Image (cartoon, rainbow, N blue to C red):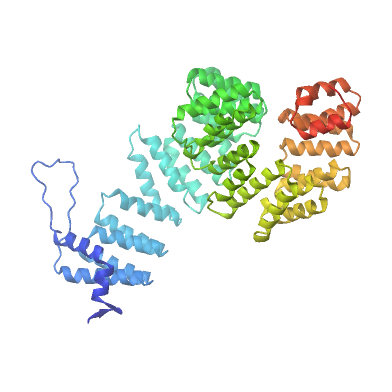
Length: 587
């Protein structure tokens, strides 16, 4: 039996039957096509090359493919390109290009792409592949003419799109400085368009030239004072948030219907803790567009932040109902559903909570696991602890992290059922299999602390710190535990200080810092820190600590008022209840 490169012809036929049949059919009909009289004059007609000996072409094609499949990419590519040149077949030139690209042969890929483009000068795909290769491999000078042609050949209506495409292509270049210089050169004739200035500013940022980006942005906003793009770009670049807010507010006075700018303004207000003003802007957006999903979602989350539960439920339920069972590709709808389930649970409406949880699976790729955990919590809360544990143990997972979440969820069910030793054993068993899993270690620390096994807690948290030195939670948890027990206070202070440096805007870590300052006798500083934390997060635990500082400083009525507002005797927060009991305070 005749063999080619160690393969029988039969082997080759079986392995490449589909390719052979396709090629044979194409080559068999590869004769010049003459346009019919009634063909549209501007409709492109593919002209396929004519071949002499089709069997020879098939043999050479198979030889090239076999070389490529056996790992000899260079030989396979060279043979395929040779066939393309000799036959003038566009498809073979494209295949040679693919081989060179997959074999990481950039120079050869560009050579093949030029042949491909030469055989099909009107083919956009050939031109785009060649251009992409040139830019990816820093051949900016070769690409410049093609990019300039894209811009000059665009109509006025399509020019902004062409500018965006040029920017996207140049962003692929590894040489960022060269890409920045090239886009400035290419877009110089088009600086009368805001899109050109934005593209240059963005490339300046990518190149690390913040001053250049700011210069472009300032010129843009001066030349285009009513451009959304200009004001939004400039706002993102300047560091002075007060200036940003004023700039956006002034723009909205002139352009009150600008949705994107108002959204940016509302978000920035919220980031600056101007919650009431942020609400006002989102309400304006809803007045202009009552079913705007972004505004409904944002208002719902804002109402949760400020504990306006009824309003939160109204906005979030409207947002979810507008989805009509479809996933939201722009937002995490599962978060809204989980909040709605929690609101229903808090008012003891378990059927409503379960109904919201049922919708999580169809809300998008996220949230299904959290919904399962919440469902188990509801079962356990209704006295069905065994069924809840069974639900978690039988839930399918895709990886070890998801399994760890379910184990931690089960441990928390046991904790809430006052079965701390069993919860600790569950986590310790899981750590036998995954000794360095930081989430399991952290949970062990928290459970051990609650069970007064402080040595176990400290060992677990210090291992988390070692494994994850840039994570703030273990530093904070260990530091707070020491401060709360009024022991090793300098060490507690240093741990919490480290946590605060890693997450300077976290109100719970601020609370820990205020508490350790209180323990160290720094009452004025403690009050200042705790007030800042309470403004960011009016949480009952923070209120308990701030109230105790006020109480010790002799401002007893102010402390009582704070505690009453935080829930007082009816509060579910253990820290607040224990504070009132320890200080023997009746509200």
